[in-house]
Image 1 (tube, helix red, strand yellow):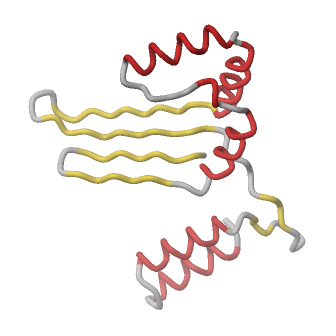
Image 2 (image 1 turned 45 degrees about the vertical axis):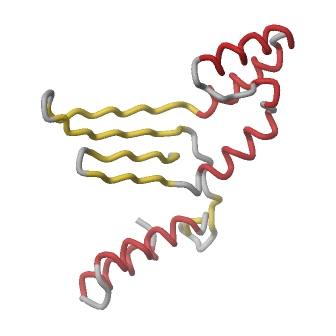
Length: 141
């Protein structure tokens, strides 16, 4: 545990801040991107390697269920590279089938540079959806 987290937890234990404030402070420390290590130097933030989707649902008939999907971001990168090797005629046919199935994605517009940009921004995103029937979380790790 780094010193900043330890200080935040100590402030929480002393009653100087609430649990919500401690959580926000810890999130802010994590977003800074560096963690101090021994000797006072800092190491860069580790790039996310997985896209995680967690769904906890409560069905009245079937009861509680949990879905936990962990997709390697390297798989997305490889998929984009493979799509660039597919002949344009085949991509148009695939796009037509995707649109017919209700998936509005144009594979001819998908570029590796755009994917890297998206992945860079994904590590800053965490989506939590709470409802009466369940909870959905999407984040990178």
